Image 1 (cartoon, rainbow, N blue to C red):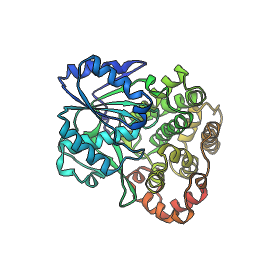
Image 2: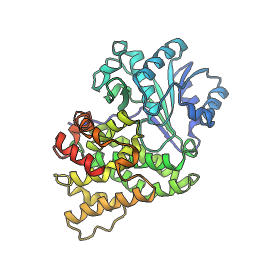
Image 3: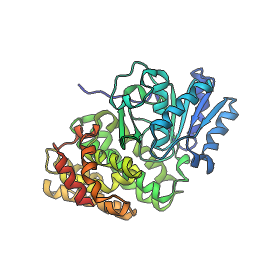
Image 4: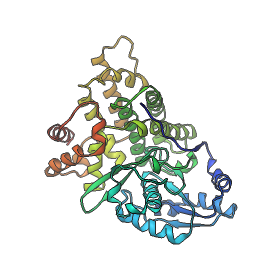
Length: 384
């Protein structure tokens, strides 16, 4: 049996943030709890949402205690602030960090037995839906607005907790590419490669099936077409809109079938070094693709290569594997993604601990090739 969980309603296109007021009033919501980060406030992106709320006379409180890799404390502080606010719905504006923080707040607020947040790790059956949330991404990568996953740092244990819960999916997703125009080149590149990682891992994961395959191949095709243009020219409307849609499509797939050890290996890097998630995924992706080619997923690499724009006519599976990996590497290098772990501050002496954490990550079970701590150590060393 296969299952698809998606938002109740989703909007796409430049300026579609205006529907916040329409959807809020249609649903009878009275006050918003606005979760975002300090940089989006500083650079005026949050003002674009405040203007919509003010014009519609919808009161709101702002919560900006959000880190790039959100922590248990960020969520717990947010739950307390939400309770004090008297709000009846949440607006989450930002990348995965802000939306993940909002998901954690919304779940705990309606399921107080999980107030420690730690108990939400893994696949947890919470009793109640999260506080209704409108999610507006400002990056084209995480697809947090359409997924049933969120990631929170347990700072004491130095680990990223991957929480998987259909009750956390935002009620409304509003994908407005105008909110992404201010993304700097480095963030555009990293988040775009994060989306590509989602699409490729979602396509070859054990749980993949016809519907999700359709989503992931289209996402790969669109990312290959639009990502470099979006990095090179942040005001390129076609590229921004293409990436905004592509990352959402990738999320429609992987959220419902899982990922693999690229994410398993990336998560500890965020916990140990605060490495941006997209950078970690982008760097590790070609190494893990090479590793996973020795699995039943190998024939799918021909599809990946074709979606990346490679002429695969008359290619063997072995040639398709190489073509897919080479295409990913070319794109990564063309947008200045670091290629080795030592370049981003990873310490060689940490590799064993990183590998143990990666092996125990919830994403490992979806990997198309059975793995081990020793294999993951080898991958980290190869990427080092």
